[in-house]
Structure formats: C-alpha cells, structure tokens
Image (cartoon, rainbow, N blue to C red; front, side, top):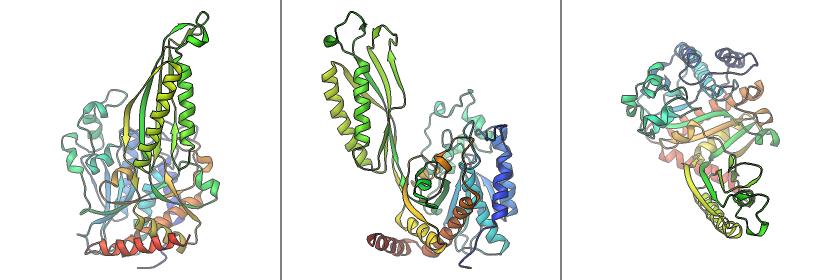
Length: 432
C-alpha cells in the first residue's frame, strides 16, 4: 500500500458542487428534507457514484444507503465511514454531505489504482439524520417501537417514508449491525462551531460526542394584581425563573467543558398588569461525562430548592431527553493524530457538542470523528462555509486514518493492535 495516497482534489470538490445542485434554493442554501424528492434524487446520485467506484450498493430496511468496497480479506469486519445527505429546511452544502463524499472519494482513489485494504470499506448514507436519526438508530438497535415518534410534521407515517427510500418498517430490526460486522466507524464532518477557526487549527481530533440532558422546568407561584400586591408578599414565578436562569449560567461556567442553555421560557398569564403565577422553561445541559452531568444537576437542584424558598414558589424538573455521551476510542484518536502529523497539518483535540450518527455507531463498534473548520462557526445555515483547502485536508486525513486503522486492526482480531495503538497514543499524551 502506498504510504501517501491523496485524493483527487478537483474531482472531490466537483462532487460537492454537483450534489449541492440537488435541492438548491435561490439564496444559495440547500433544502433536502429526508424522504422528499430532493433527498431521493440525491441518494440516486450518490448510489450511481458508488457503483462507478466499484462498490456494491444496497439499501437496508432502515433506508440506509450502504456502498461496500471489497477488501483482501472480504469476510473481515468492515471499516466504515459516512454521514448524511438530508438537510434542515434551509441548510448548507457541507453538513453531512461532506463526510459522505469524502468517503466516496477515498474509495475512488483506491479503485483507480486497483488497491485494496485488508478490510472491506463501507460508506454509509444514514437516513433522516436531521430528524429522527432513524438510520443510525436502526443500526445500533435503538429504534423506539412507537410509530408516533417517527410521524412527519405533515402527517406522513414512517411506513410510507421508509418505502420511499427503499426501507421497510416491519423489518427495521434487520438493519442492526454489530462489532463482528463492523471493525470501526469514523465520521468526517464540518465542526459546526468556532473552536477550530478561533484556534487557527486545520483538523479537530474529536474526543467524543457529549451527552445531552433536557428538562422542562415548571415554576409555580401565585398570579395576582401587579399594582395592588406589595412586593414583599409576592410569589412571583418569573422572578424565580430569572434567578434560576442565572444559577444555570453560573453552574455552566463553574469549570469544565459543559454547556447549559435556557432556550425557551413562557410566563402565565403573560399580561402586563399581572404577576406571573406560572413559568415553564427549558434546560439543555451537555457534557462528555455522565457522572459530571449528574453532579451538575445535583448542584442545580440544590440551588433550585433555595430559590424556591426565597421566592415562595415550587420548582419541578421533568426529564425530556437523556442522550448518553459517546467517547471516541483512544486508538482511533491516535490514528487521526498520526495522519495529521504525517500530512503536516495542525490539529487539536476537542468535543463534539452536536449529535451525529457516530453517536449511535459508538453503541455498535469503535468510533472516531474528524472535524474541519466551519467559517464563523455557522451551520444549519445557507451561509455555512468550509474552504476548499480545509475540505481537501479533511478528506486526506480520513483516507490516511482508514489506512492506519486497517494496518492496526489486522484481519484475525483487533485487540492486540488496539492495545499497541492506545499505549502509543497515551504515551504521546503524557509528554504534553
């Protein structure tokens, strides 16, 4: 295997441009909502490119589009990459699609040189990442058996949606994969944040994808006349909400890498001359450590009890979402780091604070992620932009990472090589 294979820059960038024509909006944005005609057309385009690159292509029962390039030991577990090509209603051309097309370009490079890794390679286009993440959840066995969870905003049921893209709800459990089938999964993605650009770094070696806890917080006070009720006797739910919002911000800034947000707040009766008697507000709190999240929430509950006493209110927190953190394996971080060093690219370790299909894939097999900069941190936005140079750098890092992982895993078992890679990485970390 050649040690310095590189992608075809012009072909890769042209593929990004061509896919962006499907679902293009007049303002330069992209609209490819999952299961729509635009999404289906984009899938057909990627499928055609996969076949031209010598891949065998199938659609599983969750609608995931999977291209497979053979390996020297074709019965070995595959090394997989990929992302999604569906978008938010007014998205950009890089979120998701960039990682899919980089995986495709990696295979094109191997095919045109008649080269094969020991392991087969898979490039996966996951179904509906921007909505239900049903594609990656099906692979991890995490699909909820509740049709209402997957009904579209326009009322379309999941049976119809999956049929449109070649899936089948009744057999969705057949999409599940395991570590005997997949040796590792590495997702290349635009950062969707400002960290790399601010640090003037080319590549982000992702340490893991944060866990998310979401709550609805209800604060019960007493509605009363705004003019006739003395200040001292008030049970103002909005005052308690303000104090609690400040407490959340203080806890989020107490040291560590956690973030916490109050993004929605509604006061009742919500009129100018009445003291709010009820407030409902949201809390979104994220960190890579579940234990740390537990500790932060314990601190918040203590503060909430004090605020409730001070304001004469009742404060209750109702859990709405609990997404478990997904750590990237250290040996995959080591492989990405080595690729950056070999290619002489600046790099840093960072967290992913957004959810990705890789978070579900971490339940199945070893997982890693590579980030490239997003200008001004923009994403889910028609103006999102990653420079052609950074796009190419990321794709080359992905290619070299997969070659390195293929070498480390071998074909007869991966534990020995994983340990060697992990020890090497930890040794490097200890020097810093």
